[in-house]
Length: 129
Image 1 (tube, helix red, strand yellow):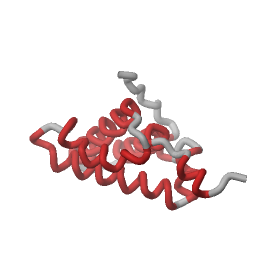
Image 2 (cartoon, one colour; image 1 turned 90 degrees about the vertical axis):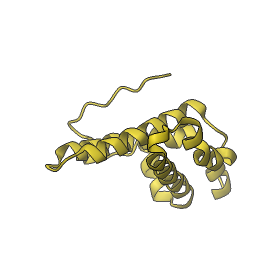
Image 3 (spheres, helix red, strand yellow; image 1 turned 180 degrees about the vertical axis):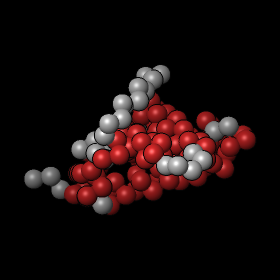
Image 4 (cartoon, helix red, strand yellow; image 1 turned 30 degrees about the vertical axis):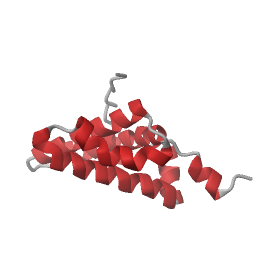
């Protein structure tokens, strides 16, 4: 039987971030359905997408992921948007912690973050760089 400690230790940042990218696709679907100005939403989602894609690419060790996220704005953030980049890094940190503490969230991520908002939407292709 797998203990909760083993279950949590099995989480890799790249795996969680891949699932969060799938959830981001659903959020993008919701955003496109809104009737108001979507510019701020699009900017925030693009920053978060870049952060998640970089985390998948770098695949930092779980023990170092919090530090990686906190340093992300310095290493990858544009100077003019460092506040927004920092905010997105903190949001991903909270989602990382949630994946460790809330079993239902982890199950949802493991299922590919399914959402009705993502239905009827073509999945975005991600670069493998």
